[in-house]
Length: 257
Image (cartoon, rainbow, N blue to C red; front, side, top):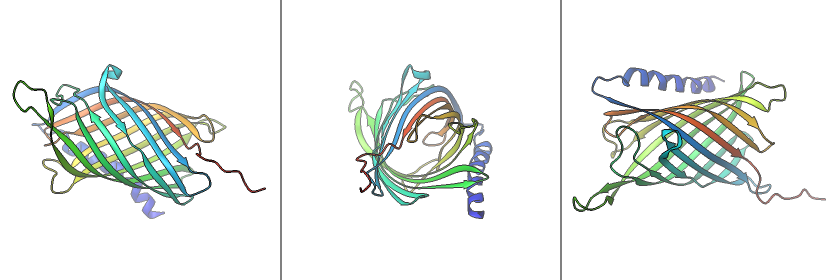
């Protein structure tokens, strides 16, 4: 029990960090309104402990008018116990110019990722905590000559660690409708990171509905606070998010007769 209570404190420590460092006099602030449309599937393979992770996120700037990011993240899951699973996979991300201080051009990113997911009950609520490591290759864009278009010039390698804590609070007698609440904090680390090790924080509050035993939908508001490379620009991204999640089993086998 004590270690779980310590985990609950981490998002509040992240919020304290933001409050204490986010108002530097020389830091520019970029406030944006965004829309994220997401599908996340964790599909068991029959009766085995193995499963597939399938994920795509359509992240839009200006509440849907323009691209912010495209993310595609497949992976493999392995269920160690009813409450503990591990996963690993690859991701492709394309980031586009957006906001008041846009990137000079869209750029690609490839990343490998590994995670541990722990689910538990506390205070009569269902909780989950996720620790994810990422090895990131970010494309750096440049013009060969002043009159050329931007093209890929180099790959910059970085590491990142992420921690998420999530809970849901039933608000209907059946338990099918609930309030979803989570916070996730991101830190960069390694010799290639310059300027700021704190990457971002995301906090989400929304309404969820269980459509079936394996499928649910959630709609809500996410406040994403991002610190750009070098730490001179802080983004406050006010984001409407729609999540469709599924645990529908693939290659389901019948019980023995």
